[in-house]
Length: 354
Image (cartoon, rainbow, N blue to C red; front, side, top):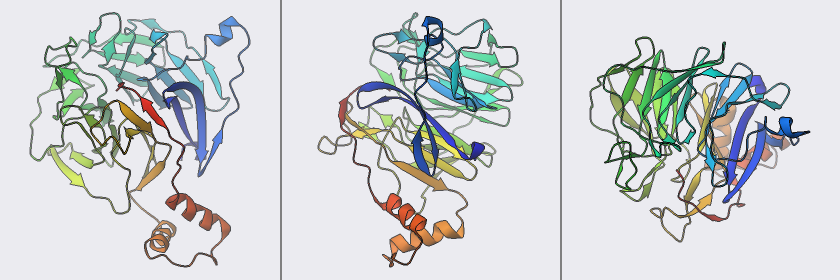
C-alpha cells in the first residue's frame, strides 16, 4: 500500500461543498485542518469544488480543474505533500489549459495528461489533450494526429503501457456545443503518447453501455470499468467490465460477494491487488434508479480483491454461513461487523452535476 495509507480527496457531499483530506488504513482517520495564515497562504489551498481530478505522482497529489457554483471553474494547479500534509501551488508555465470540469487526468512517468472536460470560458465540450511535465512544471498542448476522440466530459482515461484508453463520458450531437442532445459513446478510443496519434480501433461485441461518471482502472495490463450513469436509459449501473487491449474485446465480470448498489461519481483506487471503492451517488430508493435529480450520497467502502488471502476467504465464509463469532479475536469481529453493517449517514441531495 502507498505508505500503508490511502488518501481520498472528496469535496462535494450531501449537496454541500466540503474541503477535507482523509487518510485511511483499515479504519478512517481525518487529518487535522489545514492551517491558513495570511492571504497568500490561503490562495495555496484549493477552494471547494466538484468535477476536478487528483493524481498521485511520487509523494505528491496533484489536483487540477473542477468548479463550484460560486467560484466557477478553475485552472490553477494545486499540490498536496503526503509527508507534510501541506497544500501549495507549484509555479507553472507554458500553454495552461482553460478552466474546466469533468475532464480526465492520468499519469505516465513524470507527466500528467489532461483530456476533455467542459471548458467554462469557451462554454463547450473539449477534446484537447494537455500535458504537464512535472520535472519542469511546463504545460503543453499536444498537437495530436489522427481522428480525435469526440468532445466529452465525465469520461475516463486510463494509462496502460504508453497508451491512454478513453471510454464513455457525455457528449452532444452538436459536437462541442451543449444542446441537451446527449450522446453516450461506448467505444474505446486510444491515444499513443509516443507518437502523439489517435489510433483507429475496432469494436467487438459485446460492449458495455455508454455511460458517464463511472470508474476505470487497470490491473495486469487490462482495463476495468465500474458503475456510471446513462440519461437516455435513465439508468445507474453497478456492472463490472474488463477490456483486453491485446484483442480489443470486452468481457463482463461477475465478482463473488455482495457488490455496491448501482451508482455514479464513486472513486476507485488500486492498492496492490485490491481496488478500494468509496462513495458515489444513487437515486433515492423511493424515486427509482432512473431519477437524475433526487440523489443520495454514499459513505460506504467496498474492496474488490483480485488475489484474496486465506484470512479474507475465512471472513467471507463466516458471513456467508452465519458462523459463531464469539471466540474470534476482537479485531476480526470488528472487521466482520464493518463488512456487514451499513453506514446510514447519507441524506438526499438535489443535483444534476456529472
